[in-house]
Amino acid sequence: MVATVSVTAVLTMPVVMAASAAADVAAPGTVTATRPLPPEQWIPGSVSGTAVTYGTLGPNDEPALSTGAVFLPPGAPPPGGWPVVSWAHGAVGISDTCAPTVTGKIGGPYLGRWLAQGYAIVATDYVGLGTDGVHPYLDGRSEAHAVVDMVRAGVATEPTLSRKWLTLGQSQGGQAAMVTATIATSYAPELDYRGTVALGVPSNIENLAVLGGPGFPQLPLTGTTTFIAYALAGLRAARPDVDVDAYLSARGRAVLTLAEELCYEEANAAIGATSIGDLFSRRLDTPILAALQEMLAIPVRGYNRPLFLGQGLFDTVVPSPLTFKLATDLALAGQRFTFRVYPKGHLETMLASEPEANTFVRNLFGP
Image 1: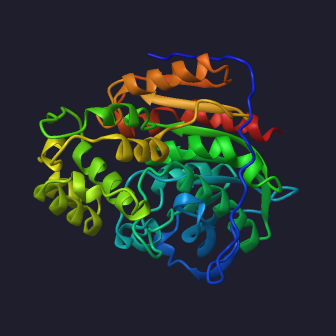
Image 2 (image 1 turned 90 degrees about the vertical axis):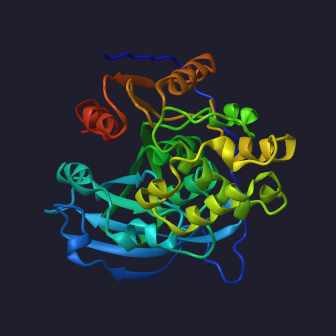
């Protein structure tokens, strides 16, 4: 099953102003350290892999550091340099031990196929994964800044990279890619942003948060309690003005402790059987709901470059009705985008979308 939505009109977001860097934090996109990655951690087909630490903006647009990696394809770069794909990864956890540049799990054969087509890959870990602080999972603006500043860091690290770039993201990275699309041209006007491919995008979660509280039932989905725990732990770290612990049960506080320590597979094994309702001691009210709205919501305006949105019809991680609502809201807001639906699950949609996503990207970069 394939569905396509294409509507015209372009609206732009207000200019996003970069905050002044603190004395001990680099300006956005500034590289503070590099190290060679061991070849076994390279994306398949790479001729080099370099880990970088760079400045960006974290929660509340405050200066922060992120880590990431730069990979080059084989051969000589085309005139103007290698076009850049900024990869936004899916959920891995919120502990530093889960960072892709720590585990060496950076995209695998999927990104290798993009590399083989002549794109350089830059891949952020996001703020708090490999750097100080708790990773603010699903904090869209923090993720988006890290994705854009990873391109800046890549260009600064490797002179064969072009300033032409796009973002490609799946799952958590799909949300990051969507928010990136709304800030890219204003936040980094010196770069040449071409568009976005966003797959398995977790959206409209903030609209369900009002139901949060004791008695919220176990859902027939994959990993939901673990993902909610990651989001609450990130919110607790990023927004100390919101007393997250005041809403948690004893079990909820124990779950968030595990979430901060364990990567996704281990965390889901340990806490996945816990219902969302068991996390809470009372219903969520205005302070925490407003903070979750700010953190989780995906803008429905501001997409001034082409957008490809892909969703699996049988996705049990990101249910398709939530993405259908996102697509409807984008259309009603007059945004131009392409929406494809595949009869697949969550990760399978990433693979099923490749042929159409490849064509979409080739058209973005042009001849």
